[in-house]
Amino acid sequence: MKKGILLICLLFLLCSCGVQKQESSPLDYVDKVASTDLSGEMARSGAESGAGLESEPERESRGLSLGAAEQLLVDSKGEPMEKVTIIDNLINWVYADTSFFTLMDHVVVTYGFNIESKMSTSKGIKVGDSIQEAKAKYGQAFYSRKQANSQMIGYIDKKGDTMIEFLFEKDVIMSIMVSQLEVFRKMAG
Image (cartoon, rainbow, N blue to C red):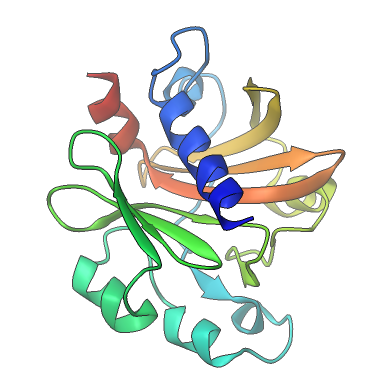
């Protein structure tokens, strides 16, 4: 199961970065959708967004956001189950409920919630919620795309140069990814 979750996160990132030329990237939509404020996005526990009591691991991981130092990641989440170098110094830090990606400057540039996660977005959306809930909370300024038989919608914060994508199947969110757009620019070459 955990290997499948790792593959979903890698699929999000690699397909979006142009590894498969026929696939699209969030960069393709920057000029096609209105900006959505994503400045509040952090890897936060469900309890922080009003979803109930948080567990010790959730309490430890709250507040991790894009730009956080690798050391803060280790201090908050501990050592990962696995660390995988993807390409060009992009490292995937795999935990049971989340994946964090860092680049050679040792800061978090992308993170994702998987099917085992109880983490939620700043607007309270978590894996298992319906895609309609995400649209209701984030608005209609989204793009849609498919990657390797997976459907996604995404929102772009042009001012913050970030994006959030929700991968879903049959109206149920299966994974959530938040990333700096700079990652996609670097990967596109």
